[in-house]
Image 1 (cartoon, rainbow, N blue to C red):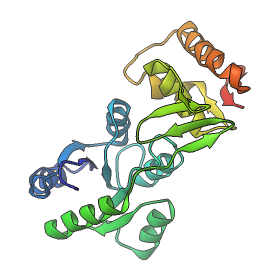
Image 2 (cartoon, rainbow, N blue to C red; image 1 turned 180 degrees about the horizontal axis):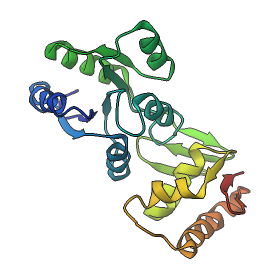
Image 3 (cartoon, helix red, strand yellow; image 1 turned 135 degrees about the vertical axis):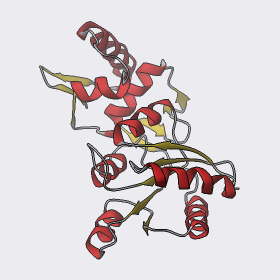
Length: 223
């Protein structure tokens, strides 16, 4: 059933957001309209959506950059993204699809066609597969980690930290990026707070032979 699914709609044009607000209930969808990439990341930190409608020409981080980041992040890899844009040239369409968009719709769009494409893409996006790394499995749909067949006991902040490190496993995660992802509303986080949380996650990974390497003044690497 596609009805009741949650759709995030990112567009800086208030008129387009109004169209979504009128159209999506016709398909039985729940929705949240957002005006920028920063609003999208804040919404995702509170909870995942079932599908994302994404404009390209956004203030700050543009749609292509957002799409690229989403498809490189294990937490959001399974969210189907439909690009809805006035940039209707072949080059932009191909770029969007190459970056991982599930579909590409030109503006202006027909409401019934939009709803049909949303439903079709929701049908195609089945249950997400677990991602494994060095004995740890991550289930994006349940947002949970397991090791040796048992769920790992993590606090919410510990889970968010491990999700980010896991999505960029083997690569440097800058400390500033980690703070923005885990504490998006905080104005100033003490270094000690971050260190304590990293230490707690490291302690839970140690028996599995996995380490979080601290790169001084830069960030962290899950090894």
